[in-house]
Image (cartoon, rainbow, N blue to C red; front, side, top):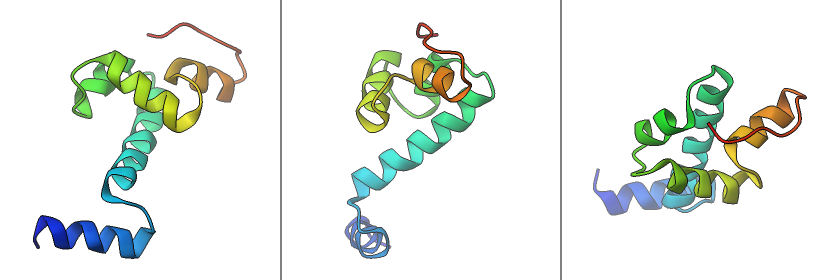
Length: 83
């Protein structure tokens, strides 16, 4: 399948652009890894980001808060600093 065909298929099946779809997958994978205690920097590099700060920026745009804060809020512990 060509790249262009894949982009069209993702748009047709999900209603999202390929970039938006890929970002959603990355956020879901990141949340899973965060909940297992994996470090933000390790997750960032695993997902192909060149820096943890670039990953944190993407995560914050997608979820409204940085990864550590998101996870702490979900676990009912309030705010924590980035790891």
